[in-house]
Structures are given as C-alpha cells and as structure tokens.
Image 1 (tube, rainbow, N blue to C red):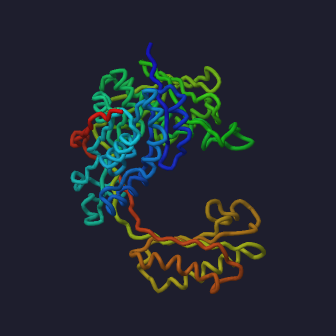
Image 2: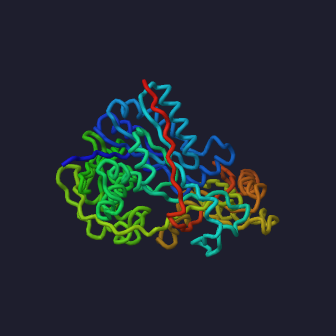
Image 3: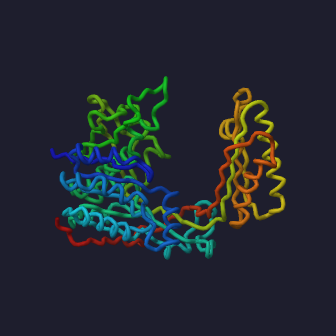
Length: 445
C-alpha cells in the first residue's frame, strides 16, 4: 500500500521557520504545508492591501520560501500554503521571483476565487442578523473558506508550489491526498479521514508538545527545539502522526487527543467545505515512540454552503500601559486609572468601548476571587475602541502623561493606536463561488 508523507511547515503566521527547514531536508516528504491564515490575519492582510495593492500576502512568505525551496526542490517535496492571504496573485509573483533567483526548476500556481465581496451584500451576518450591505462603506472584504478543488487542480496540472488565500485549514492537507490517491469527491469516509489528518496537523507544534506543556502535570522534553509534525498517510485514509528523530517535543495519545478536540464544537459534525467530517469514532493508538496511529474518521455529504469572513472598518483602537511596583502599587495603579478616566471625559461619545485593568491583579483571573494577596507590581492597561484616530491617540497620550502628572513611581509606558478591521461571519452557497487556478510556466534551472 502506498504511503504519502505530509508535514506541517507552519501553524500560524508567526510560526518558527527552522522546523520547516528540518522537515524539508530530512522528512522525505511528498508535501509540506504552511497554514498561516486566521480570521485576524486575513483582516490585517486586507488592511495591508488597501494601503498597497501589491501587498496583502504573508509578511514571512519570502523568508519561508528562501529557507525551504532548495531542499524541497532537491527532494521532490511540493508546497501548499494559504500565505497568499488577501493577495494570492502577488504572493505567487513574489515566489516566482524567489524561484527564479535561486535557479530552481519549479512551477508556481495561484488559487483565487475566495474573494466574494461582490456576492455577500444580501447575506445575513451571524453576529447581528443584519445583511452585510448594512455596513455600507465600512464593508471592505469578504473571503469564503474554499475547499480542495483549486488546490487539487493546480497539483494535477503539475504545480510544485500552490498558493491560495482563504481556504479551510484542513483542506490544505486534504487536497494533496485527494490529488495523490485520486479520492472521489463523494467518498465521504475518505474525505472525512483526510480532514481529520489535516485537523491534527494544522497547528504545527500543538500536536508535538507546544501549547501542551504544563510543568509538573504534562512534561515535554526539549520544548525549545520542538519539532513540527508529519503524517504517514495510507490510501484508505488511516495515518501515523509522528515527528523527526532528534527533535524536541513528543507525539502521544494525549497530545493527539488535545489537538483532536481543538476548535471542535460537535465531533460528529465538523463542517468543512468538502465534507462534514465525523470524528466521533476516532481511535488513537501509540504504536511506537512518538508514533500514534489514527483510525476511525468518517464523513457525510458537504452542506453546500461556505463560511465567509467579512471584514469591515470598526473605528480606531487606542491603548496605553504603565507599571507601578513596590508598596501600595495597587492603590497607585487604581489612582492612575481614575486620573486617565477623568482626563478622557471630554471625549464623550467618541469612546465607543473602554476597558481598564491592573495586569497582575484583575486582568485575567481577579486576585480577590483567588484569595490572593496584593502583588508586588501591577501594570495598568487602558484600551478603548474609538470613533476616530484622534480620540484613539488620546488614550496613550493621557497614560504617558502619568509619568509626571500621575501617582508616584510610574514607569515603562507603552502606547499605540491603529484602525480596527473587524471580522464577522456569514454563509453563501458553495455553487456561487468560482475558484480559479493561475499556473505559470515552469522555471527551468
């Protein structure tokens, strides 16, 4: 039985690059997948593209490609990624330039069609129940979570590097399996198993010990050098999750179980563009050191609808922070907050939402609720969503002025302001979305 080796090169936009290089060099991979796009990052990418039509793709795209392409070209490893973010064409063009510069014989493809801004006007937003068009000129983007179709088409056409925008995370991993094994798009059981593998791999080190370690409770060896995961996938959709020898971290039934449950609302109905995956009968078995066999995944027909992330302008965010340490620091921090609140009173309705907290006392878990004594230091944080940029900048200005106009002993001020691109959700019929593949000529060495 043939086996496909598929590895994770990144689980989020800011992920480490070195583990991906290690996989490219030693993993004997067929496919290396970079999952770098979340709701927040697609919104930021749209904001970047609005400022510069040539921007809007992953800021680490070029560094990642330069780092892994020589080994991938040498070892025949193909790349699939959503680093195209809001601008897959520009990302593909940048990648082609890198390929040309490195003198590698590779073909690059861009998958587009997830931009559905022109289709969502009448679609009702999940958060408000109002149609998207009610946002009027604040509506700036709408990206559908597309499935495997475009990626598979690009791979079938011979692409070595496939760059898309807003595809569903598991689809990035499912697509190479559909391509390689020729799974039918109504083979719900195999599509469900492929989605399961994608779900387990999509967050990189989250299944090899990252975000798992808890000293004294869940020990993870050599977390500083944690390796990224790979899967050995059989044609029937069963797989072994593992990592490279000599890397830090671990792969166990426990790490796989935590990742299996990640972001799953109903294990029997994990709704994806290509299939409604069923994880309710999944079994995980440790079959060797850092080797977990995954079986029992299944699936049902897709819903026929695609989730859409709708981006819109939602005011400006202003923030300021300052620290107080030593005796009576909590009282001084609270006095500082009172001073800033009074100073901001003249902004009135220009502050739409506001939050202040003493980090170390009541920011996440209130000390009073924990029965804890006052800490030895606190950091005042004041943040607000404002109607305009000027009001947002006032938040940080007033916190900074506490240096000389506030309580004793303040230090370490930081301040920032930026426009808010908020994200809402809606659904559109999958049949209304047209996915396209743009394949460039092969660049010969």
